[in-house]
Image (cartoon, rainbow, N blue to C red; front, side, top):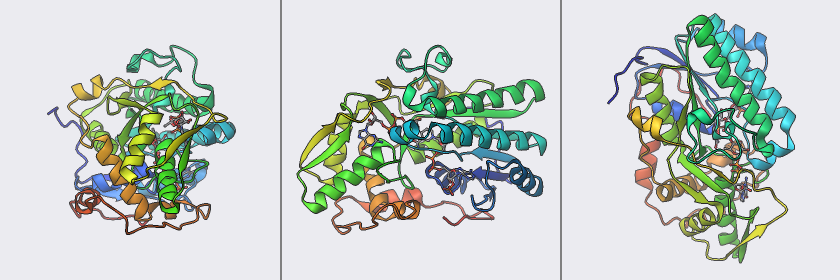
Length: 356
Ligand SMILES: NC(=O)C1=CN([C@@H]2O[C@H](COP(=O)(O)OP(=O)(O)OC[C@H]3O[C@@H](n4cnc5c(N)ncnc54)[C@H](OP(=O)(O)O)[C@@H]3O)[C@@H](O)[C@H]2O)C=CC1
Ligand SMILES: C[C@H]1O[C@H](OP(=O)(O)OP(=O)(O)OC[C@H]2O[C@@H](n3cnc4c(=O)[nH]c(N)nc43)[C@H](O)[C@@H]2O)[C@@H](O)[C@@H](O)C1=O
């Protein structure tokens, strides 16, 4: 195991975006680190507002920050709202990173995304591929904001000696995901489509695009574990890929989700929808060399995400846009105890346990 160079024990740790999928997983994972977790509701602190961010940071003075707040969405949302994805993310990350510098935060982690890399980068994509080619148009705005965020962390390190690091997760999924079919990523969309088709007795589900694009998936609890590992053991200017090291075609993924959910009908394609990047498998070498590897396999992870969907996690995220009718709740063929144990905090030293 690599040496712990930054201990979170006894520290005030601010998780920005604690109600989101990743932020809530980081909060769960931090429960065993013996730290005090600080959170702020979006309604109390709009991170796009510099005055609100600086006032909150000045008052609460965190020692460490996980920046897991962002405007996030799937391929269609990114494509439809490029101004929101660029503006919100640029301003939000600039506000938090600059305020963290001003109040002398000791360590900060910025979360980017695998979409920062060129559309046709060599696979698996190494960290050095950044800015070596053109971006995928469907998420160019979001990618540019994320590249700005990681460069901002590097710049505060260079100019001010701040220990601000960046992690670039691959496509994530799990409890707390967004299951709204217009704005979600592919995994929650497939889980919802397969489940609803199964309980309604429908004969097909329709996936977007050709089904040929390849994507790499990581369960959000693995992502949170990797983030905490990096926070404790990594300190350098360059960002680190956070992935599983394996990819799968969207059509194969749809088949796997259908199997897990128990949907036995056809999978058809909506060719009016975009494919996006043909392949984005990130190299896992750097993270592996830093002593971390994933623990949750894809099929097990999908079963866990499906349980979370059935448990109604998505209802809290839907803002009324989703029916909320979970039809067929009792028809669960997976073993629950194992997955729910992973979600439970193992240590109760959290001063402020946020409510969702
Ligand atoms: N999901 C994925 O597949 C991937 C995610 N990531 C990265 O992980 C991070 C978290 O993503 P994820 O958890 O999926 O996203 P979510 O949408 O689930 O969560 C985002 C969080 O950010 C908060 N937020 C957004 N805008 C503001 C704002 N203006 N002020 C205050 N809070 C705000 C939201 O609060 P509220 O809900 O209250 O509005 C929410 O808690 C992001 O940086 C994303 O880029 C990286 C790769 C893949
Ligand atoms: C994490 C990453 O997420 C986004 O990139 P993406 O990987 O292209 O996102 P996605 O999960 O929405 O789609 C993956 C693939 O799957 C196909 N697909 C099939 N059927 C459905 C479907 O029903 N819904 C969705 N959303 N996609 C579908 C879809 O057509 C595409 O080929 C970025 O915008 C950016 O935000 C980013 O960083």
